[in-house]
Amino acid sequence: MTDRAYPSAKPNGTAPTATTAANPNAAPVKNQMYNNPNRVSYRPTPTAYHRHNRRRCSGRRCVCMCCFWSILIICIIFLLAAIAGAIFYVLYHPQLPTFSVSSLKISNFNLTTSSDDTTHLTTKLNLTLSTKNPNKKLIYNYNTISITALSNQVVLAKGSFPGFTSSTNNITIIHSTLSMVSQVLDVDSVSSLKSDLKRKAGLLVTILMDTMVEVKMDKLKSKRVGIRVTCKGIHGSTPKGKAPAVASTNNAKCKVDLRIKILKWTF
Image: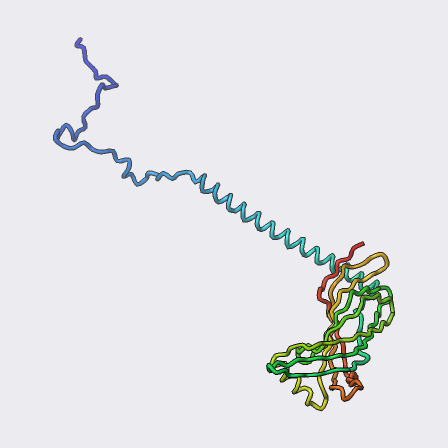
């Protein structure tokens, strides 16, 4: 028998392809992996991107939650304050004090012009007012009241009245002397006063009163708050001779304004 030689299943080298064998000078064929249309393109795992978005969304969520709880707490506070105010109003029916002008007498009113063409104002007014506390359970404690008399924003005189306590359903009479000694006026103020003095109704006078008041209710008391009382509708004239001129107060009306709207109650 003749022995046959079979090629090894594992060649030592790379067997030449048919093309190489046919044309030994041809360029080697490149691998077609990158030109394969069925190849799935590589995409990096977007772990960092997702983590960044998660952080950003988490931050927005925290801000939204903080805003929500802040608004909710503010609404609850306002609601509780409204309920407390309603209960307080129902129990005590608080009312602001009332003021009225009883009389105003002008004892002195002089406009003098000096040699340097400056005009000086000297006045003296006697003012009587009354204030009433209409509350049945609230007591008002007033600080010193500063009083100013004006005419078209021109200050005529100033005075004050000492502090006092206005009990429930009580009327207090206020007497004060207002004066101004040789106050220098500008040209516009002089023209305004002279024009008003020529009117038939007389000089239009406004009374301003500023003070601080404390409200007491049983064992409770408020912090002192500012109030301003404005009295308008007063007409006066300059005195003739030694007798003072009595101003007309028939149409005088006084308005009370709180300078601070919120009262803080303490025990």
